[in-house]
Image 1 (cartoon, rainbow, N blue to C red):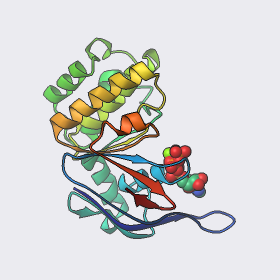
Image 2 (cartoon, helix red, strand yellow; image 1 turned 90 degrees about the horizontal axis):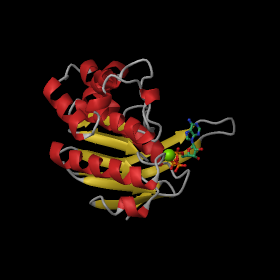
Image 3 (cartoon, protein in one colour; image 1 turned 60 degrees about the vertical axis):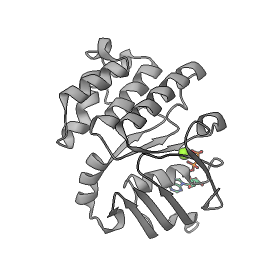
Length: 218
Ligand SMILES: Nc1ncnc2c1ncn2[C@@H]1O[C@H](COP(=O)(O)OP(=O)(O)OP(=O)(O)O)[C@@H](O)[C@H]1O
Ligand SMILES: [Mg+2]
């Protein structure tokens, strides 16, 4: 499903290139869940952005569902991002001018994969049915993250990428959102790559790896 081979990435800085990833190897099978841990600044978000096609690798290869991202042009990459992956961030990144219902459907519509029945099921299971006409600023943090989760799953992506998805939530709410995320991931059969600082959260995923000194260990 996801095959990362010898990925190198450095950021250009005024002092010269800052190497962040130095030969990352990682594989994730279909339907599997993997927790990516590592200290602050170790490159976890960088790796997630590369897998999401939001940034380009310097060398190596990232293959998602048989598609090598480095071979895609910008336009193909943008199209692939819409259909191939679901993204959830620590900041919920909802669109403030759109209602909850429209936020939920937004990405799936862009991808031409809007499925009203699946959308209502997601809203129902995420406990959002009664707030569909509200706007993001009228929601609690937990509700906003549930909308972000629904939006990411609405287009039925093969791969769900989550960067500290419960990092902004209190422990109780975080537990609820994580339960929903894992249930929906299991039911939809997508693979999950989740960045987390919490060993307790990481332990609920099938595998755990640590990013250290530019490489994946464990
Ligand atoms: N756009 C950028 N330009 C230059 N340096 C960057 C850029 N983005 C990240 N970095 C640097 O790359 C390194 C890895 O950053 P990254 O955000 O991937 O770490 P992280 O493991 O996600 O950390 P955290 O746990 O704090 O979120 C850091 O040293 C960071 O300062
Ligand atoms: Mg990060």
